[in-house]
Amino acid sequence: MPRAAVLGAPVAHSLSPVLHRAAYRELGLTGWQYDAIECDEQRLPGLLDTLGPEWAGLSLTMPLKRAVLPLLDETQPLAAEVGAANTVVFSGGQRQGFNTDVSGIVTALREAGVKSAGNAVVLGSGATACSALAALRETGAAVATVAVRSRSRAGPLLAVAERLGVEVTLADAGTELVARSWDLLISTVPAAGAEQAAARLADGSLTAGAVFDVSYDPWPTVLAAAAALAGSTVISGYEMLVHQAAAQIELMTGCVAPVSVMRTAGLAELARRRNIR
Image (tube, rainbow, N blue to C red):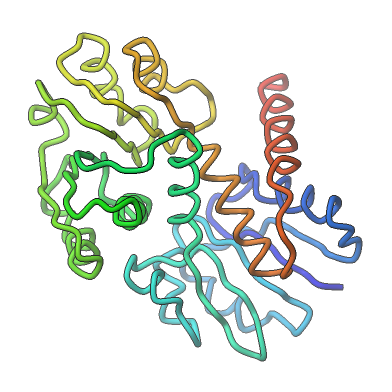
């Protein structure tokens, strides 16, 4: 029986099992199993060593996307550039690492009608922000502003930007977003961390043609609500989640992922969770 799972800490909240299992049902992969496994950075090497030949692949969430890199036999060039792999595929006894977050962002942007973003700002400097920079490069952007709360913690992101060939200007997440107009604002911070930007969208001191918030539960976030009222195109991180999972399924199974079925299943699960809170 082929197996796959999502690893992370915490992982109980993950929608990945719902998305992947829905795809397996639709594709007729009745023998496939997908689980959620609690795993932190310290446990990851040992856990990988226990996986047998029945394992097809893994989805990785925080804090494992960077920690897995030295444990791989092969790394997709994009994952190496971004410095994060959210997908491991087992093939021929090898651990192969991929990054599907980037394609997830790019597809979500394109479906919302955002095909290029010459003037873009990214909130945050973590692994998802690095994937956002790579996605901006895919849209043709060669420069980007990254708004951070601590410049001293932006070193890894700046190293990624250099590998990607994207010129990054660091800005203060508070004062330096005032009185600016952006083609695209991508928030990779927790919903509460974007409240200041939301307030500035609401009072008009900050404008953005499109706002992409990687947060999606609960939805709308404060940022998304403010962006909608301001007339921005609003993109939910849920679309990124669905599309990155679809890419994982295609890597692990070799089948074309049933995106619409996955989207519907995930939304139903989010509604169920809201009803029991």
